[in-house]
Length: 439
Image (cartoon, rainbow, N blue to C red; front, side, top):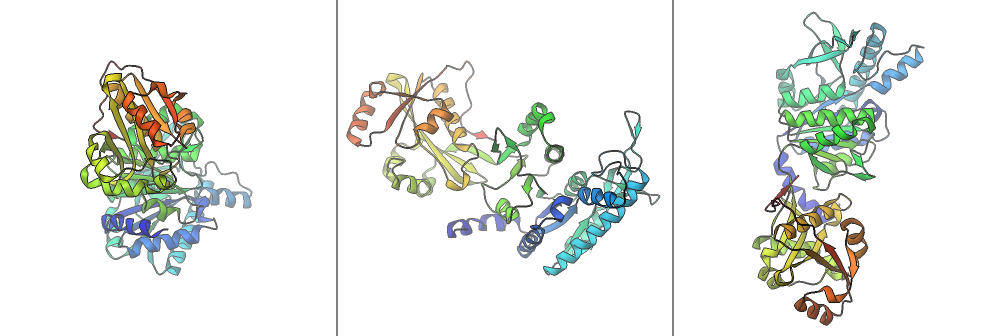
């Protein structure tokens, strides 16, 4: 981590102090080489006065134990029919894993305790099939969890529940984590699995608002891996329950937990229930930050050098992309109303936030803004990003004759020899809201 980035985490440290994070760890990750590093990361969180509750899965280990015993488990993840033999294997495996996690937490100087806090009832009969010892969460004994957290003890919660008669049920760990997070009013619910998060069209989706996720689930439910689908569904539900942030991370990646929590770019997928990302007007107080943001691209001649006075004089033409109150990108749209032409300029996204589709969001924002203001053409001049503008933005190369006279004179005197790009804009019948684009 570079020094400027290190300074940047202070914003998160103060904001997360005394908050509760619920971390759900899949059984597959418990057996990975990176599990010891995850425990060190949890120790870092605790050192920053962030309270942590751990929920763990056991699906992989249940399958392994059943195989060793020559038994075929009726279900291993707690979402299907759990017969008596599978339940007994699940109990033995889950409690063994709980004990191992507590031992490992002790090795990083953290106090931990097994939390018997899930009150469950039978899942019941579904489509005529009795799910037997598969359970649903009836409620969470939040008092015992709050007592542990108050005493700086990390509660470790297995994927098991108990009813009033003392019967044990196998409960899906994704569901347990959700119910625990809701009961504790957690600031974050974090799922650690073998998945990098939500991948669409080969690109990791860094963050999206819960309604957007619900649309994705409607369209792609059948094509998503079962384990990832479960976490995405529970993430959407968690946001409906009022949990502000849900993160899906690859638990096999070293430092993924800290990188996700203490950066605005992240390394997984974050689902959120309130405003987290927005495009807004550039304010006078932002100019220094924007100039610092783009300085490397100015040095490499990707972007034209702009003075503070020049930006200030055209401040109404500049917009910034803000994530969690941090500026991570910018764009300008210069109007030439006499020719019904607007220019896309100063498009930039910070290196730490690349490959998340943010550049395209800024392009779309500027394009919609131009449409709403009645422009029929959008131009862009670029020395190094012209291929990106063509492939991602739909621009085509054109000649200098398309430039408004004042812009052409500036182009010819600059000596940059930029490629000139053009996009014809189709009019919109309904005005586009451009004061803020939230996701």
